[in-house]
Image (spheres, rainbow, N blue to C red):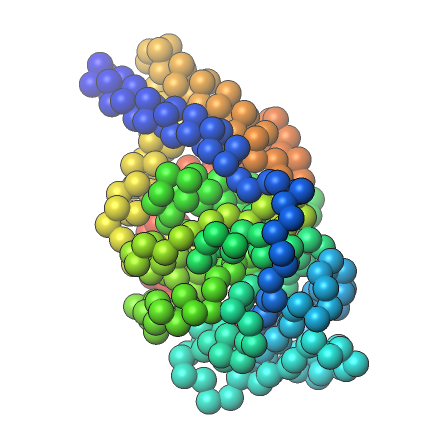
Length: 361
């Protein structure tokens, strides 16, 4: 039992150190709203695969983009949808001179990466922003991308999930928030491990220098994570998009089946991370799991309560600092309960990831 206490204490110190770094580095997010940098021309690429039910809300969000009309273009790429996606997009772009609808014919790469590649190849401008067909960017999204790419080659930003009132939906939003905090932390520490593809941008010439998605084909999915890996491997400048008007919202999954399938896809991509990225994530998640479940050892020794109680206090502080990464307020009682589930599900997702078969819808 003494050995267990020593191990938990060691992992807790690591966890506590990292949490303090999270809170410190949150201050490093670009947030100068008075920045007078000139606006850059941006090509927005959005791939679609059977997104008929989401097109109306996406187009509504895009219509509210606060950016000079002649400084951006929207390239909509339909990847041979079998529903009404193409017809709805065709109707939606009528009369919009800076919108283009492209059909993903003769893709050079499979699945989503092939559709994205077609859109990027059709982009007129060097600054390229990516989002998904089921998303809703904030009005100042492109302004913040222009600012973030001024001194960076690749950038990504907050992408909150919007939950409904169901338990699985609220948990999925919480899990996404935790993942985004880790993404920002590792970026701030100089070892970026992941990003959210629905709020992602880069310089087109850098994308070409990295070999495009050809350099990420060790995995069918992972268009965002593996491109971050290549940018990190090639010492490109990676930055963060301001959260002040630069977030991109999306709905959560609605069932546990969808959740586990989605997380299996995400975690399976991590098998292709660099060794240093894997090492950091392994220690981070192990620390979380051990410290969280030290709670059950408190029945044998009350000292085991100390790590979990202090961790809970730090979690509350961290989530408060990162409230702008979320779409809704996380309730106090949910944090402890969600953490118990979160650290259990991490293990399930890890093992599920070995059985996941890559596909795009």
